[in-house]
Amino acid sequence: MLKGPLTLASFGLALNLVLWGVPGMVAASGAAHLFEPDSSVSQTLAALERTAGPTPSLPDALVGLVGAESEALQVAGEGLQQPTPKDLAPRANAAGARVEDAIQTYLRSAEAIVDRR
Image (cartoon, rainbow, N blue to C red):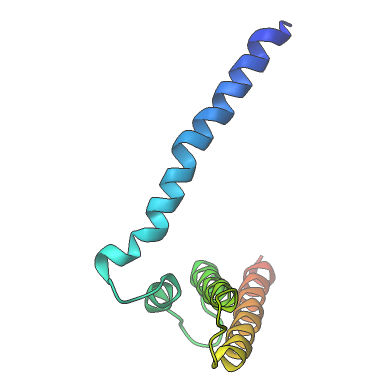
């Protein structure tokens, strides 16, 4: 098999992914501000959650997990600012608790699917 064309094709595919994928992800992360200029990504994802009782469906639990992780990353980003916000510690604790709760909910949802089969 010819290694040269395969290497060039792989390089072209990787370059295409970078050229089109990264701007797409940046645009998607800013798309929430088009609809709600004053909301963050985590608030928008929290509004999309459709929890149905203690064990939501797996996609709903995944949306909750992504929203909780987004909130935690937002708090971590604010922690890098100078001067550090005064209410950072309670917000970080709340974000950590929300991530932990979202992980447990996601695991319960996954277990519910596995137990049904």
